[in-house]
Image (cartoon, rainbow, N blue to C red; front, top):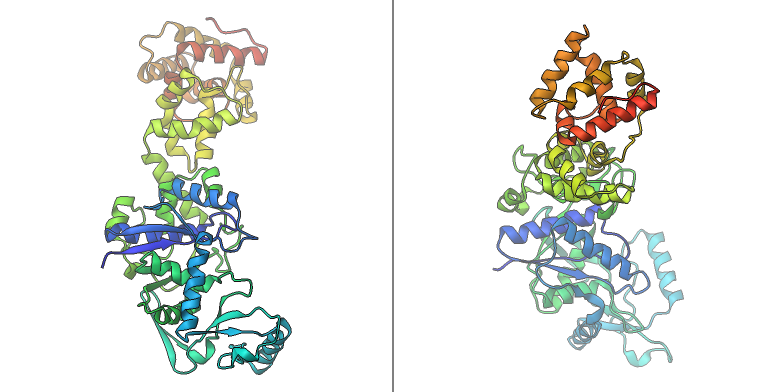
Amino acid sequence: MSVVVRFAPSPTGFLHIGGARTALFNWLFARHHGGRYLLRIEDTDRQRSTEPAIRAILDGLDWLGLAADDPPVFQFQRVERHRQAALELLDQDHAYRCYCQPAELEAMRAEARAAGRVRAYDGRWRDRDPATAPPGVDPVIRFKAPLSGETIVADRVQGDVRFANDQLDDMVLLRADGTPTYMLAVVVDDIDMGITHVIRGDDHLVNAARQANLFEALGRVPPVFAHIPLIHGADGSKLSKRHGALGVDAYRDQGYLPEALRNYLLRLGWAHGDEEVISTERAIEWFDLDGIGRSSSRFDFARLGSLNAHYIKEAADPRLVDLVAPRLESDGHRIDETARARLEAGMAGLKPRAKTLVELADAALIYVRARPLPIEAKAAQLLDAAPDGLLQGAAAAFASLEPWSEVELEACCRRLAEEAGLGLGKLAQPLRAAVTGRSASPGLFEVMRVLGREEVAGRIDDALRGLGRNAAVQ
């Protein structure tokens, strides 16, 4: 059997993190088995479905690297096919017209609640002659659910899940206005798309029982179901925005790499031994449904940050420059050829210190800020404490230093500090403050090498002018 799976979001909001994990599991399962991964936009709720939400879903999937193998199927465009299926079920006595009015239905629901029954609709039109229908009432079409016995969902994650059929009501397939319900549309679309496996959240488990009966009524074998436990917050409660229930676009904006988020989502509910860092290639090789656990997983920003730091460290320097440059430009910094060259030359020292692209862009400011640099408070204290003449002497020595390398810069500074009777830190700390505007940075001599002789001299001069001391010799 050739595997065909689908991710089927409703475009009523952003692509949330739970949906992204569902898409990932479907994508990996298809790739592992050499099958197809499809996308269906379930937009039959016309009041809540929006074009911006559709774009957000498609953009989020593209960014995550989970674009579908075929163009997306839009469920609303298939309404006529859904209606046809409902009429076929009606003709085959698997469905019936129901003429109940809203007041009748509400009374039935109230009676069921009072009696503790799950099945609210009492089936009063199930075997009744439509000729007795009240005039002027547009009926709904309901499914004739089995009344006795049980429906067993052979779930690849949850095991065999049994549902008493007297708890499964005669669900509406076609509304009075002729529009199909979610339950009908999903089954018909899964049939027509050739879906072999349905991998989704376990909040759909009861739906699986109803849908299995509907598949059989339509003369089809239900797909293999695999219902994934939901993601909870770190405290075990329902996932909320404070726990990480954000749109995928928010994670992109917060500076996470798509491969890091994929790796993290993979480990939310799926495991392969004790492996934590799993490349996409390995994930495709290893992923299967038997690795999905039955317990809810907990979202942990610290673990995500740790994984993201790993992937930033492993990323190619030019790619990271491409990712941080727009962030720097959006904050008003000019990224010309010189700035890009400095960023690329300095990226090896920047990236081990960052957990997100936001942190990386902030660290990269030392290479792109226009002179005179803003001096942070701690850095200003270091400059104030520097002995008179120390920075001027360093600037003079740098002017003729050859070659301009980290080794020679360090040797020069050590010699100057020794001549002044100081430890290296007494020179390096104010020098770092002058050159970067900060009290912490990648290695000082690396930064100076990347900036170049002229820029270093200019920054030292700016710092001395800011202190009201004599400018450096240039």
